Structure formats: C-alpha cells, structure tokens
Image (cartoon, rainbow, N blue to C red; front, side):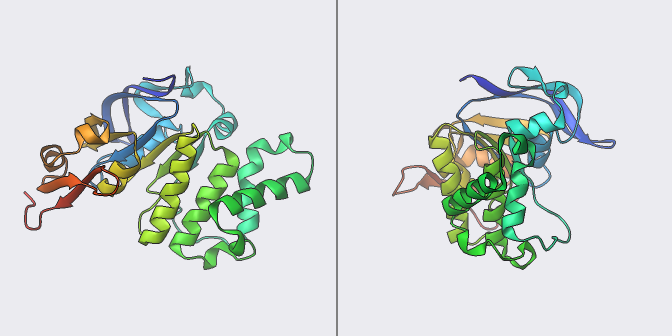
Length: 262
C-alpha cells in the first residue's frame, strides 16, 4: 500500500445500539480511487461516516494521516478532507454561488478578500461546468445539477482527499459520467477518492480498487479485474451475474441475471 491516508483497525460503528460495522480492517493509500459496493444496508455509508469522523467508533479505531481521528478537531478534519453526503429534507433557497462559497469556510483565513473567494468559486464552477447555474437557487436545481454543485463545493474545500456517499445515485447517464469523469481527473492528478456506489459497472470502470461490504464486514477487497466475477458478485448480492469486459475500455462489465435472486 502507498502512504496510508486511512487505516480502519478492527473498526466497529453504528447508530445508537444498532451496530452496523463489525470489526472490519482495511487501509487506503494516498492516490487510490476506492469504491465501496454492496447490498442496501450493508454498511457502505457507515464506512464513509466512520472513517471521516462523522460518527464515533464503538470499537477499534480509525487512523487518519498517521493520527487517531479522535485527536482531530472537527475544523481540522474539514481542512484535510471533503465529505459529500446526501442532503435529506428541504433544501434552503441559497444561490448556487453562495452555497459554493460555504466550501471555503474552514479555510477563510487564508484568503485576504472577497475577491479571492469569488475567483476560487468561479474557477471551480468552470471546472465542473456549472457557471450557468451560479445565480439560481439550489432548491430549483435538478438532481443532476445539484449533485454537480455539491461536488464543486467539496472541491473548493479540499481536492486532495474526497469521500462521497452515492455521488451518482438517481442521475441520468450524462450527469453520472460527468461526475465520475471529474473524480477520475482528480484521481489521475493524485487525489485520494473514496466513493460508496450502487452501480458495480461504474465502480469497476473508474476505481483502482473495490472494497465490497456485506452485513457490516469486508466481503472482498482488490483491483476490479481480480475481484469482479460472477462468483464474487453472486455471493455479495445473493443473485446470479454474467461478467464480461467492456469492449471499449477492457474493464469488467457485469449483467444481473433476471429471476436469479436466492
């Protein structure tokens, strides 16, 4: 493994008395693109929340950049990483421009003027292709538009370490590819990316490594070409899969078999 960014050491975590993750261990190195896959309720989102310090461990520990994550202040973590979680409930009517500027709050002392902030926001909006949305209320955006805005805000905060919970769920193909291509570009530039994903094909196409979670434990862990197969996916999802290769990229490509749920 490259220089470790996250180490989950016998990690258990959950909510109130409900334990979701059960004694799991793995490491994530600098410059990896990790996809977390697995059934609904397996613990993918809980992994994101636990290793980013959003929820405490009930057992074991998380080491982030060589230190126990409990030793960091919340503000320090916000400087070191960006986390994108689904927003639940009513979305306030902030303009996109204002919402993007929130990504600079942990870093505000580094910038001498509002002009500096405006330039950074505009540059990232251009990178993500959302310049035309800047004056619109976020409450009026489509799901795909809002997801691009969230990604942009996260990149304004930190583009070196990003954790994203279901960044392409409910998006059409155009927006899905747009979001994943942005993340892929950052990964090729040296960023560490961790995504919880439902779509195995997207995970196999973009990831350098896949960690599969089932019933709160690591079911398999490895590079897509070695771990994605009909046997592994059948065990993970309790249904049959046909696996081949994408004829364009050569990456694994999977197809669920109808009527095969066990």
